[in-house]
Structures are given as C-alpha cells and as structure tokens.
Length: 212
Image 1 (tube, helix red, strand yellow):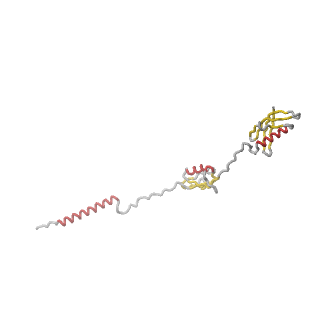
Image 2: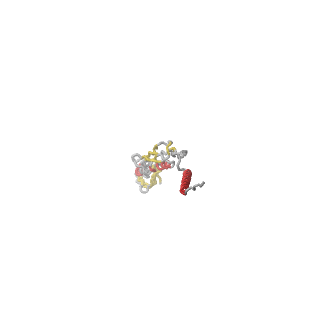
Image 3: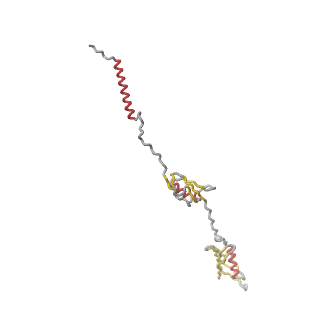
C-alpha cells in the first residue's frame, strides 16, 4: 500500500503555528516577570503624612524685641510684632509687654506668636549743672554770697572768677577767694567754702566756713 507523503504546504503551515504558539508563551513569561498584566498588588502600606512637631512657647515678656524674636525663632516659631499705632522697625528699641499665645501653650512647629510691644520712654540725662532737685550753680552762688553778707555785714564779695563749684552728694560745694571789710573799713582777702542744697526757689546753705 503506497503512503502519500505530506505536502510541503502542510509542513509549512504547522511550522508557522509552532512558531506563533512559542512566541505567545515567551511573551507571557516576560510579562509575568515584569509584573505586567494581572491584578495590581494592593498589599503595600500607604506612606503616612508627616505631622508638625508640637512645641511649647517660651516666656519672652519683659525682653527687648530682638531677644524675644531670637528666642522664639530658635525653637521653630514665627514672630509678629504689634506696636499699636506705631510701626516696629528696630525691635531692639521695643520691650515685650505680652504674647499671644501665652507662654507655656503648645502649638505646632512654624506657628506664629504675636508680641505686643511698647517703646520705653527715654530717661532724661541729668544736667551736670544742676542737682536732682533742680538747684543750679547760679542760685547756689547767690545763696553762698548771702551767707557771706550775714557773716560780714560791712562788706563781703566772693570772686566768681576765682571760685570753684562742683556737685558733691547732690549738693553744690563752692569755694574761692572773697574780699571782706570790717566796721573800721579795713579790707582783706580770705578763703571761704559753703555747701548748698535745696532748689533755686529755696536754696539752703548747710555750712559756711572761712579762713585766711
């Protein structure tokens, strides 16, 4: 019985089918290795959203504005100044009266603290030519001369040009040469010293001394 040999057409057909199936299997394996296809993996834990750190507000009341600002910014807080109807330019010239939120409060990092500040009134510089009671050297000299007139009623004159005056213990101390005259018209010079306190309206000569 003679067998019929397969035709070249059928051999080529099966040959291409085999190549196609192999290609599909290879591609499927590559896809699996790369994670392509199939259901997504839902087992991964989502990353947590970071939260701001909690901070305790330090007490800065009574401090100069610049020092208070540094103390707050150093711990991670922001600062705003409230100068009322005035604009705060140089913080060092201002003093913190109060703060909001209050000292000891807990806030998130980066929170803003409002500082209520005032500018201190400048202290008047004492005048070297007056005492704290306002006694001037001119009034002290007049009082000193009056004491000399009382001591030497026939004539007394303190030389203003030779006299020295200075404030000691908040009182005027005046010393210098004076010309005096007695009842007989005799004149001479002597050294005098007096200490004067009080005010220009009411000077008080605490002592008056003299000697040759």
